[in-house]
Length: 358
Image 1 (spheres, rainbow, N blue to C red):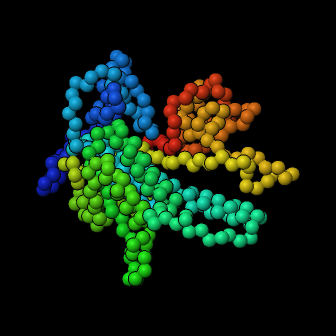
Image 2: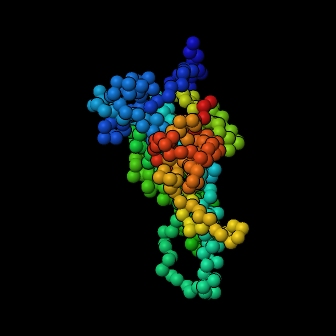
């Protein structure tokens, strides 16, 4: 039985309905079309009308025939940025297609500190001083840790627009304090301001960009009587994704409760650049090889299907034993002696992801 909710002015009455999962659809030239339901996608695949594929953890289908309808609806991406977790919602007027909860890349700063220490050590061995160089100063310099955080948002949005016909992007504009000073602080005073300026300039090339302040997001959430958890590290819809949903709903929505609270959690994988040897020697003064992105012909992080462990991703390797395989859900190493003949390559990958169902 459907249960009618309380009416609100300006909003359509909402029925408590069954959550639908949608499959993104692209045509033969990879142009995004409107998503479809899984049962129709299965019929297309079985009859040969479509070919299945994975796009960064999202199951999609590619049509092998001309679509019966090319009409596109307005699809919006709501983005709620954060320091530890970030939320994305892909929504049209009637359906919520996808909710994404992403973790941020927080290892860049530490890696740069290690690199700086080792570089200074090498310099000191050769020359105890370093002449000043002024040709390495950049006016619009973006710190690597800041660029990594905002570039991750840009990559996720770029991947989404390849499988969904996205027309608009709406973002909660985050702020930081300024200073009453006459120096350059208020010009480029914060990595936060520099990073978001770079992100806004790039994402505006994808579609229409709308900014909302934090208090406006709260007003939208309070108007719909939607709660928000105080635990920011929780994998719950109402920790971050509720804000991305109300942002998207403010442009194309007409419902007062989320129709889909299932989430896809994305965790970026950390890859180590190839080094001639490890930073510290082992017992006996010998240093082992370290880093790299290839494991016996497979690119690290790639999704593969093993005969015994099903879908996993590729880690490191031992030359005489085999490849290490890791779990997508908890990042645990499942096997370190997998043979190449037992592995089937699925797709390249730079994230670890799994579904969170509510």
